[in-house]
Length: 384
Ligand SMILES: *Cc1c(COP(=O)(O)O)cnc(C)c1O
Image (cartoon, rainbow, N blue to C red; front, side):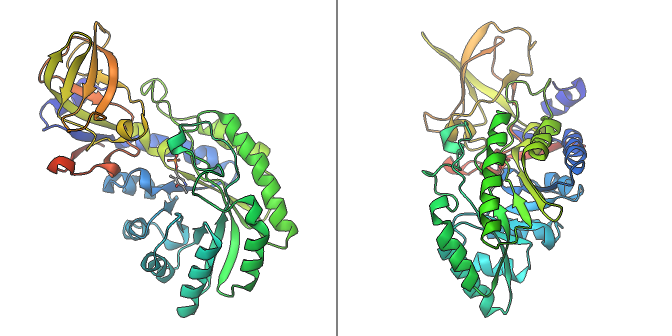
């Protein structure tokens, strides 16, 4: 729900634009820190969700770490003032220049996904006379029960080291002189809304940590990844996720000793709800089966619906939103049939010039924007 003041501000802006509510972001971060600090849990922000400078600056001010999946993200994190001892570098395909850059920055840890990657990091660290701290990204084969395009923790996925490879990995680490294995890392998928999935993850993680401990590894860091889902259907009534329950589950079901740290990498849960994509209706087409509301924003500004059939709540801000008397396919101007934000969306009578909000667009929205069709870069405005 937007205030009249916000709507007045919107109506003077050139569309489309992303609107970030930094006040809501701060409340979300506050809730996350309060809930996680009860158990001394360490939270990193998964940078790939949103790298808007003001958003990043707000997150950094809460003194949390940065989880990066490319050399570019490592660089951005450090430039934005995340301290190097809180930067983690994950990703299934790290290039040599990216690894070298991260080694030069003395980051906290590399999350490593294969034996070959371990060998290359070892070799590059050796050339620099350094020891690289690594955590092994394990594929725990736990089903996240989320959309298959955003599932990462099953054997069929490209991510992580599988259980049948443990003996070989353990043997490799023992002979790699410039690698220090400090922990284990897990990330099974995104937009997970069933808390039982995290309980299953804990049980599996306990088993795997035990295996490594029994094989004489000192597992100091247990990184359980991110994936906590948000409520895309109720962005006003349920705008901050239930961090309390989330962290309590890990406290209850994850076994850990006094010298073991538990790390989290949350992306979506921190930033999704603070963002909306605001657009104007260019044209309305009435068909025999389908009406179309054609917006000035498209998949080039928000790709999630086209990329993984994602749902976003769509509102007409220029009309009484309680009235829902027509159905429209809400589409963008891009020359692709997947450029559709929602099918048969119930809206009030919608006209050219109406302002449309696509809600919960703060995560994996602006970061995936492209200039396909030679589109302009999308504008951004903020609520302090
Ligand atoms: C994307 C990603 C995350 C964050 O996922 P969310 O669903 O946004 O919380 C965390 N860790 C890794 C390794 C990732 O790739």
